[in-house]
Length: 311
Length: 287
Image (cartoon, rainbow over all chains, first blue to last red; front, side):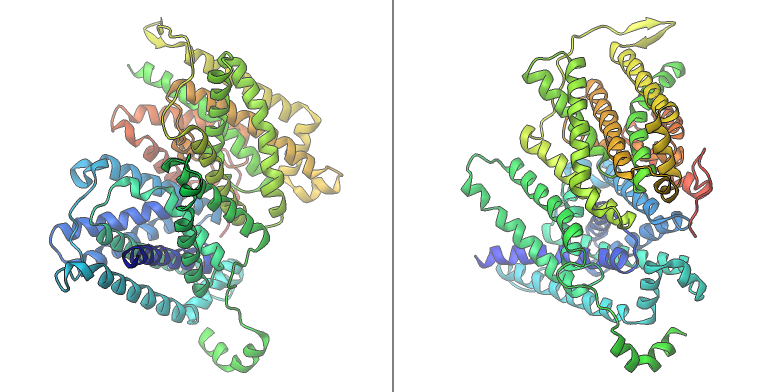
């Protein structure tokens, strides 16, 4: 039972990191990323290859973050003159390109056979039996560190500027903000976070293959962000937890209806996720915990500091 | 050899033209790129498959009935999902269409499983015309697509419905002021889009095996085609589709065939960098 809980929490942790990234890119900066699964795969494979080359987990994680940040920044640069829909299409396409690359460049990625034996961080530090718990602890520390960093970012001048870009980029331009740079930075930073998630995914499973990076991941992450409340990091953590409870909960459907096979169960989950996405968008677009907004009262009280930092 | 590749490319392009036009029509009226277009292809193919295999209807009848049924489904999806979101941003509609895509694809997966299936078609040898190998499916595809595209062109150019559709696409506010019922136009647009995507699903299914990812494998190509033609421009979408088809097939001479979609993606990226309005599109850049 404890082992089962640890497994679920580890999955929640990885989805939460991805969700924080999407929340930064889409929730705060309004740049939707449909290539989530592809960038996640890019991070996982980069980390795996660097770690397998014997560079150590820290270097591998950094490499994954850098590669994913660069990939995201490139996509953002390509679409900088266009409206958001084109960025969405580009991210989707880029995700597919990564999937095809991973599947076909067998000399590097072993294609559909996958990469086994990825070294894990802090391995041998504790006994093998309690390693999973240590890994979970490490993951939770990373999630919390990212959460705190993003909360600070959200309330910083940069955070306010990217939210201004999301609301109305023309106003932001008029106010002298470099909209293009802000977009590329926010999207690239989101990419770095996706890379970290990919790295942890690779370390956790120690074996990665292309089938792990299907559109299902994208579905989970979008659901986590929308259910939690776009732009709200606190809501996102709640959203990620809800998703995983839901996914694990539907496992028991199998016992209720013993005619269902594994494919059908997976299909039902995605149907429910798809319906959930649509229903949230229609009936509760702000999610469980709506985004933090400046209230008029606090605005008046904080006025001096607001105008100072915005200048 | 080159002529054969170009011929195959043109046929591929013709198949892609149908969903590309559907995508571009919906974009014109509702102003969002419909990510469910891939899943719509898949459902179209499976509807015809069910009629073909379980009711043993000939493929042609199965396709016609399936497409008609799917047109109704498409209108239903719009009423249930997109209508309540009409006044929301393009991105919201986009994410909703992603949700629709998950639901459609997995209903198919739930019913039919992941295995590949195929239509019951009589086998025939390809014909040799001037040294080019042409098989029956390719002839059927060409005839069907040219008929469908002519029909769409006539509807758009020469009927009151088509005029109204173009009016709403150009300037929704002005169209509304002239008393055009937007909701009626939206419904008809989905009918046309449903018919076109379902037909394309059948054509893809005749060419290769039918599995739940059938449409997903075409999604980048379809988007490349309609962006190449300038989103919202149906004639451009057809030309874009033929171009993408030929370029993808020709690229297989140089690089591995698995990378076809990568070629399409590079085409989108280059085009968006150099000529964001599409080859035929009008200037509509947002800074």
